[in-house]
Amino acid sequence: MAFLILASRRAIAVFLLLLPACLQAAESVRIYAAASLTNALETAATAYEASHNVEIVTVYASSSTAARQIANGAPADLYFSANEQWMDWLVDQQITLRQRSDLLSNRLALIAPGKSPLQPIAPGSGTRLLSLMKTGERLSVGDPEHVPAGIYAKQALITLGEWQELAPRLAPADNVRAALALVERGEVPLGIVYRTDAMASDKVQQIGLFPETSHRPITYPIAIVNPKAGDATFRFRRWLASAEARAIFTQAGFTAATP
Image 1 (cartoon, helix red, strand yellow):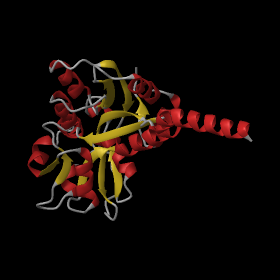
Image 2 (spheres, helix red, strand yellow):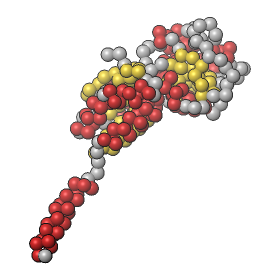
Image 3 (tube, one colour):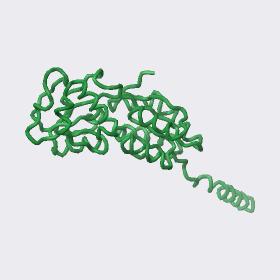
Image 4 (cartoon, rainbow, N blue to C red):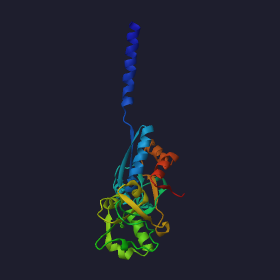
């Protein structure tokens, strides 16, 4: 009996010694990402957390807003942008980027509310977008001054010869998901977003895709931006380039970026 009591006491002592480690909080990785990545990255983060003792903290905004926040000292470990411009801008701000590479690519889509009677068209094939809008109606886009989706939209409309007539009719939004929301609510008859945004919403329909040659390639670079980033950040960064993660992004409509 004494032996059993002694063994029990030892077991309790061992348990108490191990308890702090068991209760230790999981490491966290904070990633600032383009708004268009919201659905796919949430799915990817959840999948990663399920098999790793880590918390993935996601912050979504336009790539420009996220970059400015990082430059102003936001506690980001990773930055996942929707274009190269804002990643390069961080370099200009003396932010050291590690393990930078292009992970994904996307397409630019013309969308309409789900109940719209508009038929599919091929932008640039002859039907002018202005002809699909009534007097006073506007076209929602990400703000062409700083939002990547809006920058690509402006490039496409210039290439197709429609920028001058549509520029006064734009409804610029702070990020591409805000542009999507205007169409979802029926506040505008048309919007230009990414194909992945159209796929993520059951309240809009994709009317057509803009020619890839009408704008610069839509690429999503990622980089580690925290000079003190720990192993958890490096592991998650590597995993985002894995086949498992790529399958999640492909399901959402992204394609792998061309090396």
